Length: 340
Image 1 (tube, rainbow, N blue to C red):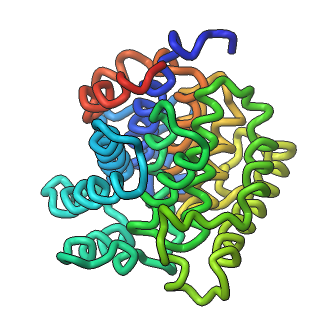
Image 2: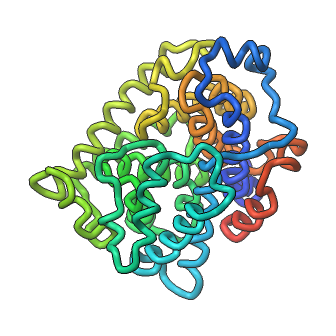
């Protein structure tokens, strides 16, 4: 793409894309591909529902975006300024009557504990969970302007850690945010996986003590560095599977067969990336491929939409779809200050 980032409005494209993917995949979650095809017809013609409702994926991405907007108000983004608004937004989501969109068990359990007065957030974190509930909501972290790599990584892992404390959940959230940032900055999709692999290797034993505190000590690892490496090694392994799939997989095949069903963090990242990279300049086709999959279809399509929107910008998405996506006005308002 030669279009400038400013005219692309990458932040708007990303937030709209994740919500549109979520809404397209929400009705197909838990169904196998034959059932989806029977209900929707050929996958390349899948249409956004007339009531384009989103799931907990977009609800929690909005919570992260609101927390970031609060934390950036008048101060330099750091862990002390971000923990409180994240915690408050997650608790508000947990208590909301709108929290009826198949929310994840890990998020519910952790948010219930976050309501406890005076409880360190690390005590609420589900240290054994690497479900996809953290990296499907992390894209807003990638969009905040002016962050350096360490701030972005720390914020991405912190927002994961409040609910999903497994080292792979932390690493996958970090890697997802890095992928969105690279695409928003104009990196060619063909270069994306090698860039992600380099990033994972470079950060393999890095534990963000200032952002995560003693979270690592809740696990059985001998050191914080060993804790971090467990997560990054699983992400590196899934990148191997992704590279192999990009060489061999048919676009007509269920993508979950190649890179996993997406219920866990690293598989959601890889399968979302696979759907995007199969159709890097056909964003709607990419969303349809992600939604017509046998796994966690809304989370996979949510990630696919974030990647495609970061790459192509706001104009990637059909106007008729954007007009009826739930939370449209808030998505546009949150994204506006983050566009270059």
